[in-house]
Image (spheres, rainbow, N blue to C red):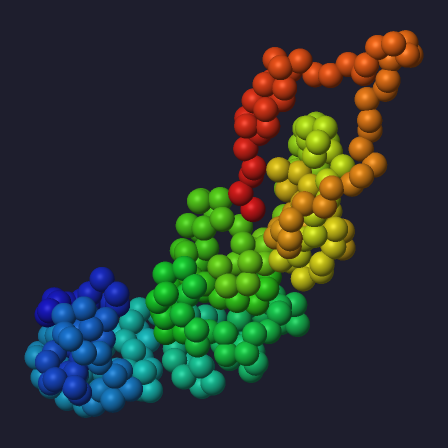
Length: 285
Protein backbone atom coordinates (compact mmCIF):
# COMPACT_ATOMS: atom_id res chain seq x y z
CA UNK A 1 0.00 0.00 0.00
CA UNK A 2 1.47 3.31 -1.08
CA UNK A 3 1.20 6.09 1.46
CA UNK A 4 1.47 9.77 0.58
CA UNK A 5 3.94 12.32 1.93
CA UNK A 6 4.93 13.18 4.63
CA UNK A 7 4.91 9.56 5.71
CA UNK A 8 2.49 7.05 7.19
CA UNK A 9 0.78 6.21 10.47
CA UNK A 10 4.08 4.85 11.77
CA UNK A 11 6.68 7.43 10.74
CA UNK A 12 7.00 11.00 9.45
CA UNK A 13 9.34 10.96 6.44
CA UNK A 14 9.64 12.33 2.91
CA UNK A 15 10.73 9.24 1.04
CA UNK A 16 9.63 5.72 0.17
CA UNK A 17 11.74 2.64 0.79
CA UNK A 18 12.38 0.30 -2.13
CA UNK A 19 11.84 -3.15 -0.67
CA UNK A 20 14.87 -5.36 -1.39
CA UNK A 21 12.62 -8.44 -1.39
CA UNK A 22 10.01 -7.45 -3.99
CA UNK A 23 11.19 -4.11 -5.39
CA UNK A 24 7.97 -2.33 -4.41
CA UNK A 25 7.91 1.14 -2.84
CA UNK A 26 6.51 1.60 0.66
CA UNK A 27 6.81 4.34 3.26
CA UNK A 28 8.09 1.87 5.86
CA UNK A 29 8.65 -1.81 6.56
CA UNK A 30 5.47 -2.00 8.66
CA UNK A 31 3.31 -0.77 5.78
CA UNK A 32 5.04 -3.31 3.53
CA UNK A 33 4.55 -6.20 5.94
CA UNK A 34 0.85 -5.37 6.37
CA UNK A 35 0.23 -5.70 2.62
CA UNK A 36 2.63 -8.41 1.49
CA UNK A 37 2.89 -12.09 2.43
CA UNK A 38 6.52 -11.65 3.45
CA UNK A 39 8.55 -9.26 5.59
CA UNK A 40 10.95 -6.53 4.57
CA UNK A 41 14.48 -6.68 5.92
CA UNK A 42 15.16 -3.04 6.83
CA UNK A 43 18.90 -3.64 7.00
CA UNK A 44 19.05 -4.67 3.33
CA UNK A 45 17.37 -1.52 2.00
CA UNK A 46 19.67 0.09 -0.58
CA UNK A 47 17.43 2.60 -2.37
CA UNK A 48 14.72 5.15 -1.57
CA UNK A 49 12.47 7.37 -3.66
CA UNK A 50 12.15 11.08 -2.86
CA UNK A 51 8.53 12.04 -2.18
CA UNK A 52 9.11 15.47 -3.73
CA UNK A 53 10.96 14.88 -7.00
CA UNK A 54 10.36 11.10 -7.20
CA UNK A 55 14.04 10.42 -7.81
CA UNK A 56 15.15 6.91 -6.89
CA UNK A 57 18.57 7.01 -5.27
CA UNK A 58 20.74 5.35 -2.66
CA UNK A 59 19.48 5.45 0.92
CA UNK A 60 20.61 8.70 2.54
CA UNK A 61 19.19 11.52 4.67
CA UNK A 62 18.89 14.22 1.98
CA UNK A 63 17.72 13.97 -1.63
CA UNK A 64 20.65 14.18 -4.01
CA UNK A 65 18.54 16.02 -6.61
CA UNK A 66 16.20 18.46 -4.79
CA UNK A 67 17.95 18.53 -1.39
CA UNK A 68 14.76 17.58 0.44
CA UNK A 69 15.51 16.20 3.90
CA UNK A 70 13.88 12.79 4.19
CA UNK A 71 13.83 12.81 7.99
CA UNK A 72 15.15 14.81 10.92
CA UNK A 73 16.64 11.55 12.17
CA UNK A 74 18.29 8.99 9.92
CA UNK A 75 20.11 5.77 10.79
CA UNK A 76 22.24 4.36 7.98
CA UNK A 77 22.15 0.90 9.62
CA UNK A 78 18.40 0.48 10.20
CA UNK A 79 17.51 2.89 7.37
CA UNK A 80 15.12 4.59 9.76
CA UNK A 81 13.82 8.03 8.77
CA UNK A 82 11.65 9.93 11.26
CA UNK A 83 11.15 13.14 13.21
CA UNK A 84 13.65 13.81 15.97
CA UNK A 85 12.66 11.83 19.08
CA UNK A 86 16.16 11.71 20.57
CA UNK A 87 16.68 8.34 18.87
CA UNK A 88 19.96 6.50 19.02
CA UNK A 89 21.23 3.27 17.50
CA UNK A 90 22.21 0.64 20.07
CA UNK A 91 24.84 -1.66 18.60
CA UNK A 92 24.27 -4.57 21.05
CA UNK A 93 20.48 -4.38 20.49
CA UNK A 94 21.05 -4.02 16.76
CA UNK A 95 18.24 -1.48 16.33
CA UNK A 96 17.37 2.15 17.04
CA UNK A 97 15.85 3.13 20.36
CA UNK A 98 14.00 6.26 21.45
CA UNK A 99 16.23 8.12 23.90
CA UNK A 100 17.75 10.30 25.03
CA UNK A 101 20.74 7.97 24.98
CA UNK A 102 22.12 9.19 28.32
CA UNK A 103 18.92 8.11 30.11
CA UNK A 104 19.36 4.45 29.15
CA UNK A 105 21.97 1.72 29.50
CA UNK A 106 22.36 -1.64 27.78
CA UNK A 107 22.16 -4.64 30.11
CA UNK A 108 24.40 -7.30 28.59
CA UNK A 109 22.68 -10.22 30.32
CA UNK A 110 19.11 -9.13 29.58
CA UNK A 111 20.40 -7.98 26.17
CA UNK A 112 18.29 -4.84 25.96
CA UNK A 113 18.33 -1.16 26.86
CA UNK A 114 16.80 -0.20 30.20
CA UNK A 115 16.27 3.08 32.02
CA UNK A 116 19.24 4.26 34.05
CA UNK A 117 17.05 4.07 37.18
CA UNK A 118 17.01 0.27 36.80
CA UNK A 119 20.78 -0.18 36.65
CA UNK A 120 21.74 -2.55 39.45
CA UNK A 121 18.12 -2.63 40.64
CA UNK A 122 16.45 -5.10 38.29
CA UNK A 123 16.43 -8.88 38.14
CA UNK A 124 18.35 -10.05 35.07
CA UNK A 125 16.86 -12.71 32.81
CA UNK A 126 19.19 -13.78 30.02
CA UNK A 127 18.09 -12.56 26.57
CA UNK A 128 14.67 -11.69 27.99
CA UNK A 129 13.76 -9.29 25.18
CA UNK A 130 14.23 -12.02 22.57
CA UNK A 131 11.09 -13.72 23.88
CA UNK A 132 7.61 -12.78 22.70
CA UNK A 133 5.25 -10.88 24.97
CA UNK A 134 3.51 -13.53 27.14
CA UNK A 135 0.18 -11.68 26.83
CA UNK A 136 -0.18 -10.94 23.11
CA UNK A 137 2.58 -13.31 21.89
CA UNK A 138 4.01 -10.56 19.65
CA UNK A 139 7.67 -9.60 19.37
CA UNK A 140 9.05 -7.33 22.09
CA UNK A 141 12.60 -6.63 20.95
CA UNK A 142 11.73 -4.84 17.71
CA UNK A 143 8.27 -3.62 18.74
CA UNK A 144 7.49 0.09 18.61
CA UNK A 145 5.45 -0.40 21.79
CA UNK A 146 7.42 0.19 24.98
CA UNK A 147 8.28 -2.76 27.23
CA UNK A 148 7.49 -3.04 30.95
CA UNK A 149 9.92 -4.85 33.25
CA UNK A 150 8.19 -6.92 35.95
CA UNK A 151 9.79 -7.46 39.40
CA UNK A 152 10.58 -11.04 38.38
CA UNK A 153 12.59 -9.76 35.40
CA UNK A 154 10.21 -10.85 32.65
CA UNK A 155 9.07 -8.40 29.97
CA UNK A 156 5.75 -7.60 28.40
CA UNK A 157 4.40 -4.73 26.35
CA UNK A 158 3.45 -1.68 28.40
CA UNK A 159 -0.01 -1.73 26.82
CA UNK A 160 -0.43 -5.41 27.73
CA UNK A 161 0.63 -4.70 31.31
CA UNK A 162 -1.97 -1.91 31.55
CA UNK A 163 -4.63 -4.30 30.19
CA UNK A 164 -3.67 -6.85 32.86
CA UNK A 165 -4.19 -4.32 35.65
CA UNK A 166 -7.54 -3.21 34.21
CA UNK A 167 -8.64 -6.86 34.33
CA UNK A 168 -7.39 -7.31 37.92
CA UNK A 169 -4.58 -9.66 36.85
CA UNK A 170 -1.63 -9.00 39.14
CA UNK A 171 0.70 -11.93 38.40
CA UNK A 172 3.37 -12.52 35.76
CA UNK A 173 1.87 -14.76 33.05
CA UNK A 174 5.12 -16.76 32.91
CA UNK A 175 6.22 -17.40 36.49
CA UNK A 176 3.14 -16.23 38.49
CA UNK A 177 5.26 -13.83 40.61
CA UNK A 178 3.40 -10.70 41.74
CA UNK A 179 3.54 -8.12 38.97
CA UNK A 180 3.74 -5.12 41.32
CA UNK A 181 4.08 -4.18 44.99
CA UNK A 182 1.18 -5.91 46.79
CA UNK A 183 1.93 -5.32 50.49
CA UNK A 184 -1.07 -3.02 51.02
CA UNK A 185 -3.36 -5.59 49.40
CA UNK A 186 -1.98 -8.39 51.61
CA UNK A 187 -2.77 -6.27 54.68
CA UNK A 188 -6.34 -5.79 53.43
CA UNK A 189 -6.73 -9.56 53.09
CA UNK A 190 -5.40 -9.95 56.65
CA UNK A 191 -8.24 -7.72 57.87
CA UNK A 192 -10.89 -9.47 55.77
CA UNK A 193 -9.83 -12.89 57.09
CA UNK A 194 -9.86 -11.64 60.68
CA UNK A 195 -13.44 -10.46 60.17
CA UNK A 196 -14.59 -13.61 58.35
CA UNK A 197 -13.94 -16.73 60.46
CA UNK A 198 -14.38 -20.08 58.77
CA UNK A 199 -17.16 -22.49 59.85
CA UNK A 200 -16.31 -24.59 62.90
CA UNK A 201 -15.42 -27.74 60.96
CA UNK A 202 -12.75 -25.82 58.97
CA UNK A 203 -11.55 -23.45 61.66
CA UNK A 204 -8.56 -25.60 62.67
CA UNK A 205 -7.78 -26.95 59.20
CA UNK A 206 -4.40 -26.27 57.63
CA UNK A 207 -2.96 -26.84 54.18
CA UNK A 208 0.45 -27.08 52.56
CA UNK A 209 1.15 -24.17 50.18
CA UNK A 210 3.81 -22.96 47.78
CA UNK A 211 4.48 -19.23 47.47
CA UNK A 212 4.72 -17.84 43.94
CA UNK A 213 6.69 -14.84 45.21
CA UNK A 214 9.46 -16.38 47.34
CA UNK A 215 9.09 -20.04 46.23
CA UNK A 216 8.94 -21.19 49.88
CA UNK A 217 6.82 -24.17 50.99
CA UNK A 218 4.94 -23.81 54.26
CA UNK A 219 1.80 -24.79 56.15
CA UNK A 220 -0.96 -22.19 56.41
CA UNK A 221 -4.38 -21.95 58.00
CA UNK A 222 -7.03 -22.80 55.44
CA UNK A 223 -9.33 -19.94 54.43
CA UNK A 224 -11.38 -19.36 51.30
CA UNK A 225 -10.09 -15.78 51.04
CA UNK A 226 -6.48 -16.89 50.78
CA UNK A 227 -3.59 -18.76 52.39
CA UNK A 228 -0.71 -16.65 53.66
CA UNK A 229 2.92 -17.57 53.04
CA UNK A 230 4.69 -18.21 56.33
CA UNK A 231 7.97 -16.95 54.89
CA UNK A 232 7.23 -13.61 53.15
CA UNK A 233 3.60 -12.90 54.07
CA UNK A 234 2.33 -13.01 50.47
CA UNK A 235 -1.12 -14.33 49.58
CA UNK A 236 0.10 -15.14 46.06
CA UNK A 237 0.19 -18.83 46.93
CA UNK A 238 -0.93 -22.16 45.50
CA UNK A 239 -2.33 -25.08 47.48
CA UNK A 240 -0.03 -28.09 47.53
CA UNK A 241 -2.18 -30.99 48.70
CA UNK A 242 -5.45 -31.50 50.52
CA UNK A 243 -6.74 -30.16 53.83
CA UNK A 244 -5.04 -31.25 57.03
CA UNK A 245 -7.63 -31.58 59.77
CA UNK A 246 -6.42 -30.71 63.26
CA UNK A 247 -7.78 -33.21 65.82
CA UNK A 248 -7.83 -30.61 68.56
CA UNK A 249 -11.28 -29.41 67.59
CA UNK A 250 -13.37 -28.08 70.43
CA UNK A 251 -15.89 -30.71 71.50
CA UNK A 252 -19.38 -29.73 72.73
CA UNK A 253 -19.68 -29.73 76.53
CA UNK A 254 -21.82 -32.52 78.06
CA UNK A 255 -24.85 -31.64 80.13
CA UNK A 256 -24.11 -31.97 83.82
CA UNK A 257 -27.28 -34.07 84.26
CA UNK A 258 -26.14 -37.66 83.91
CA UNK A 259 -29.54 -38.86 82.74
CA UNK A 260 -29.55 -36.68 79.62
CA UNK A 261 -27.59 -37.02 76.36
CA UNK A 262 -25.48 -34.16 74.86
CA UNK A 263 -27.53 -31.77 72.82
CA UNK A 264 -27.21 -32.06 69.05
CA UNK A 265 -27.82 -29.52 66.30
CA UNK A 266 -31.35 -29.46 65.02
CA UNK A 267 -32.04 -30.13 61.39
CA UNK A 268 -32.73 -26.43 60.75
CA UNK A 269 -29.36 -25.41 62.30
CA UNK A 270 -27.54 -27.93 60.08
CA UNK A 271 -29.28 -26.45 57.04
CA UNK A 272 -28.19 -22.95 58.09
CA UNK A 273 -24.55 -24.08 58.39
CA UNK A 274 -24.70 -25.71 54.96
CA UNK A 275 -26.18 -22.54 53.45
CA UNK A 276 -23.46 -20.43 55.09
CA UNK A 277 -20.76 -22.62 53.52
CA UNK A 278 -22.39 -22.27 50.09
CA UNK A 279 -22.57 -18.46 50.33
CA UNK A 280 -18.83 -18.03 51.04
CA UNK A 281 -17.34 -18.29 47.57
CA UNK A 282 -13.54 -18.66 47.35
CA UNK A 283 -11.56 -15.77 45.94
CA UNK A 284 -9.60 -16.66 42.83
CA UNK A 285 -5.84 -16.60 43.46
